[in-house]
Length: 236
Ligand SMILES: [Zn+2]
View 1 (cartoon, rainbow, N blue to C red):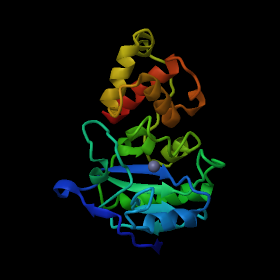
View 2 (cartoon, rainbow, N blue to C red):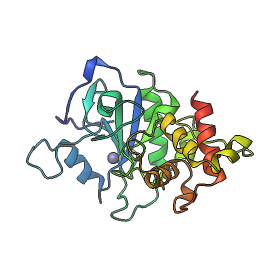
View 3 (cartoon, helix red, strand yellow):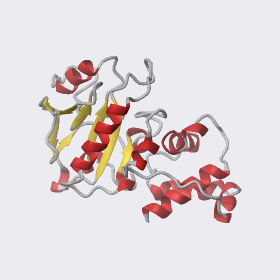
View 4 (cartoon, rainbow, N blue to C red):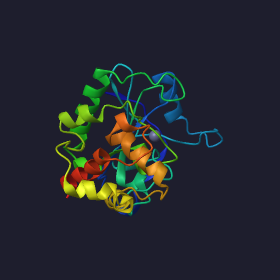
């Protein structure tokens, strides 16, 4: 692991321990560019002072910027359930990927293997349930779309990291939900999506993480309803 100390942090509010992991992509052409940005503590800089705790670079190396017990500045304005200070509640991991502005290339298997290992390593120190491993787009939908629909959440889940819906036969409950969309959006809020009430944004960002093949579908459908019900069951 490479150490690349950053000053872009402060203390966690109320001395809390991290209980979430938030995943991001860097959205930079190179990993070096992202590393330099995360170490830049010039407040005049246009993007502002930002940094995750860790980054996975283009060859799957871990780069550590900030100690895990400190509050790194990676989430920005965000909310999940009733938590508005997500930086105090989480550990942030950036994965190098050029993102939607550039090529949005596939994440590399060695990056994902390395990420799984890092998360397992972090979880030897902190209690972070699978339901609390989220993307930036989950906690700031409408403002952020990283780590993006190409991020292999399903592969992580197979490794035991994060939750994904079980796609069994849709239940009668899912069928009832399709014809009562309010109950679907209430289920999203109950699961944690509280940052916005914009239903178009919520449907899209929920699918970006959990059902990327339906990302461009405008309509609520049975599979999406079955997905939130499955996640809620698993998280309970
Ligand atoms: Zn992000």
